[in-house]
Length: 188
Image 1 (tube, one colour):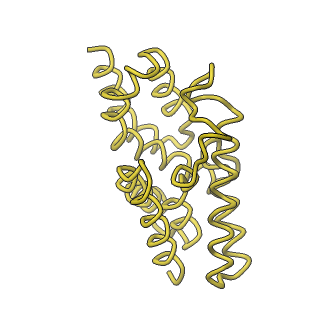
Image 2 (cartoon, one colour; image 1 turned 60 degrees about the vertical axis):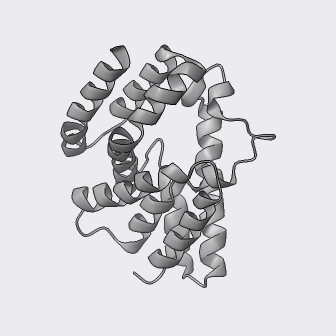
């Protein structure tokens, strides 16, 4: 994996300067789940797993406010589309600057550009790994911070969506107990 360490360093440094530094564990675990679901995952898929949410570190809330401000909350389609496409653009530019082959750069960009909604088999795999890592790493933040900001129903909708979007049966089976625990904690 020639370019993975460079991307990992770039993303880590960007997030350490942002209000989202806690997301780094989510990225590490997304890579873990990609490899668990597909042991022969290539470098592009591993890079995309670590860098899939890069847009958050570079978000300009003046021109693109946080999803919580949308009437649809976390599930706003325009917000998600921007999040995916901007993240893909940032990593594509970075990889090109590092001299990565066009094929690798374009594949990483394509994966990130669909990590929320899926598409082809590897985009779906990345989406599922993202959900698994979300349930492992971001539930506490959503319960302790987001409920007071946006309300229990929007958080519950996010939990449901993150679970329902999982397509691979193995990933769904792995996520189910985490999802059920998240719902119990939310409703407690």
